[in-house]
Image (cartoon, rainbow, N blue to C red; front, side):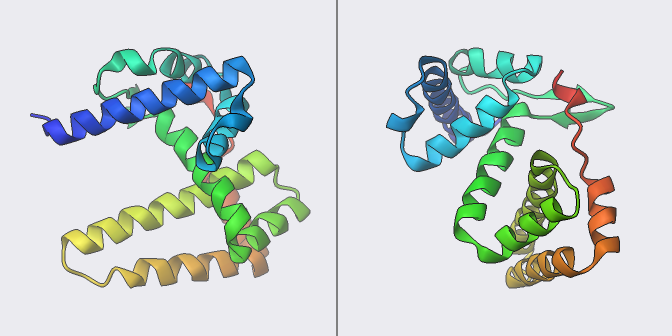
Length: 176
């Protein structure tokens, strides 16, 4: 059974997604708060994908229900993908190490969108590990330190960059 608190939270998030989506369609993104503008930019970059469009068009009608698709036996959430892009865009503005890693990837031939996938993969992996550490009473700073080391390695180690480029693909086939 789903926790009613999470259902209510998903309902509120769905309402926010719909408001941002309507601003994108109306061309009024500049009137949104900055964080919502980052989310809107991620939306705009993914509007051509059928499942993204459908998730956004009906965000307010989900009434707090989960929106997931199954791809190769794994649950995939298009909205989480957009949130990842928005989070990376925010980090690029605020974190010089993330910006340096992004710029290094661009300079060595990785497309900007793919670079966001790589950085988002590292970020979400870190967030997951931090949450798991908190739940199990372990050191929550360790995953953050590992994240920083991975960003530093991404900047200086071409073999590591190539490995991550293969690991976190630019592919959106799940959402088409």
